[in-house]
Amino acid sequence: MIYLKTIKEIADLVGVSVRTLQYYDELGVLKPTKVNEAGYRFYDDATLEKLQQILFFRELDFPLKEIKGIMENVSYDKVDIFKKQRELLTVKRDRLNRLLNLLERLEKGENVVSFKEFDMSEYIKALEQFRSENEEEVIKYWGSVELFNEFIQKVKEDETMVAKRAISQYGSVEKYTEAMKYNLEHFSEIMEQIDGLKENANAIVEESDCLYRQLTADLSKNVGSDEVQETVKKIVEFVQRTTYGQNMGSGYWNMVIEGYNRDLIKKITDQKYGSGASEYIAKALKFYFDRRM
Image (cartoon, rainbow, N blue to C red; front, side, top):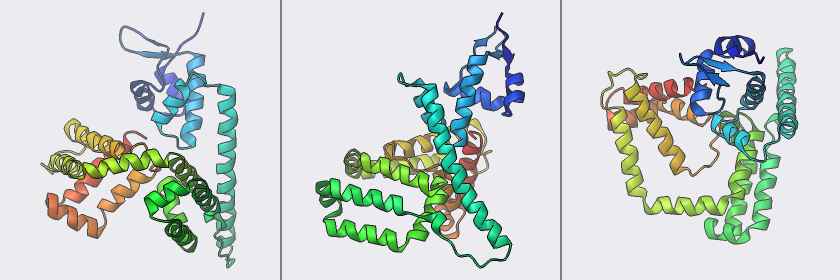
């Protein structure tokens, strides 16, 4: 007889909340083995093993949508995935160790100015490789190879600043580099779609403005209400649709939220949508993403 664990037992065993498991079910990332007539969820050992893989992916900051796609792929091989997860976690561990070692030396009072933790050489290498293998596209979208070279040189000159921005938005330079490699590999496709956006720029601006006006129509509404959160969801989906699958980084929306709390953006937003609108938008977005953690 197969023993099935309740959702509460699974939550206590794994160290996640019951709501998280419910959310995984709603998204189709992890379906329970059985749901009884009363609506209670039950899980077997095979489902628990699947949950373990999901949590490894989450530790690596994979979005749930991407995890679902990987695990539903017909070529999915859990042993191969374990190997790749181990490799990625090793890279993450090594990077954290470097940062911890640097902090330890700084705490001891050592005068250490080290920027190797912010090394952008792999990203620069990817840009140079793209230039050498896609000269026609470089000329088409940058105007000339020389202008693209200027762009690469600018990255080299501002390497530390670019690295800090990459870490803020993507979590690490490595993740930023992987995202940019993906964007470069799909460069033509992305640029064609962006060109299409330009042709419909007015309609896109109008749609964005309409959504934000809907969100800020009544600033007295609770940001956690279903009505407000449904509008936030539409805004997020709108952004995803108009970036055509580009990897914007796990910290992208945190940067957006922080932006709405900065003086200049706050002033512009409040002038457009009413006093307090910028802070309201930030709170509504934060509630939306906190609920999905």
